[in-house]
Image 1 (cartoon, rainbow, N blue to C red):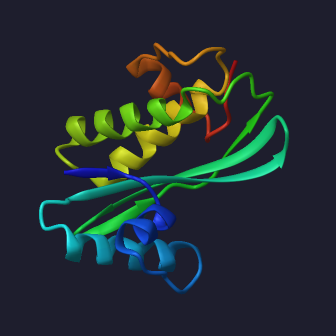
Image 2: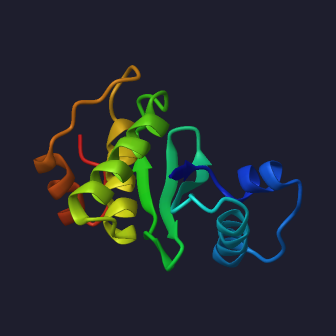
Image 3: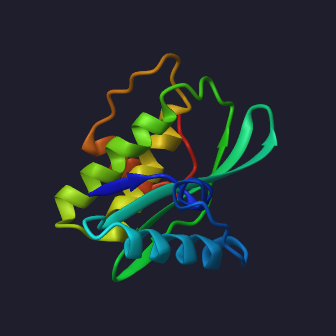
Length: 145
């Protein structure tokens, strides 16, 4: 099973708080969720830093029972629409995990790529291709339009 949510969501699910900052707190929450839900195998989340209304930095993280991978931040400027970015993230994570046989890094990187790219389109749908994902990976996480 996969949970798309962060340490705050796990905190609400388990009715407890987690100490620490950033990655440590996120890992502590993941380990608590894995302990509480035996079928849970993967937790995927994003972190967003808003610089101004149309310029954000976003990173992705995938935790598994064996470890985690957190991407570097991608800076997104000239944001057209945030609607659908969460769905794009979920699609990217699933794509990366399926294509790689469950690799956390592949899931996080594909999730980041699709959510970042989605910010460049109006509306809630996105039809990006594998070539778009590859171009994003080669661009150094700068969103192209």
